[in-house]
Structures are given as structure tokens and as C-alpha cells.
Amino acid sequence: MTTITLKINDKSTAGKTFLAFLKTFVAKEKAVEIIEEPKSPYNPKFVEMVNNAEKSKKRYEVKNVDDLWASL
Image (cartoon, rainbow, N blue to C red; front, side, top):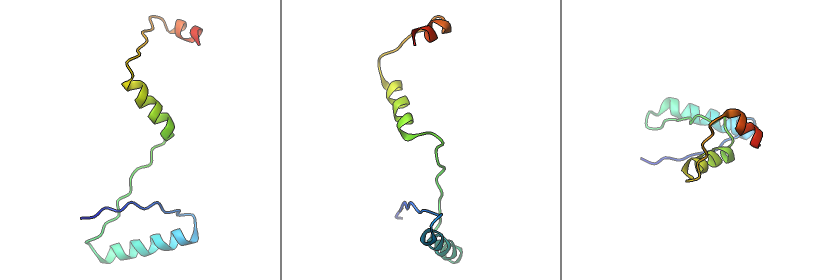
């Protein structure tokens, strides 16, 4: 089995036509299926920053939330 990921602009004429073709092809042939991956609502750079911070060994312990906001 081969997996191909396509990024199609479904707002363009070519994108709409190609998607219609794929859906028609898939309806007739069961050997091919369309799998849509859910889009993340988060900015990829933000996700990367959070993941890097989570992996970091630097940890800050805050005893009082008011102290946290005062330091910013």
C-alpha cells in the first residue's frame, strides 16, 4: 500500500475539479480511499515552542500566581 498526501486548494477552480474527480473515482473503486486529516487549530510554531518548553530541563515553581504576573 502506498500513501500519498496532497495539499489541494479547494477554493480554486482546479482544486475543486480535482477533488470532484477524486471523489468520483473513489466512489467507483474501493481500492482507493480518501482520508482527511483533522487540521490543528494551533499555529505550528506555537506547538513547537510548547513542545520544546516541555522537553526543557528549566522548570520554574511558582508558589503564588500573583508573583508570576508581577514578574512579567
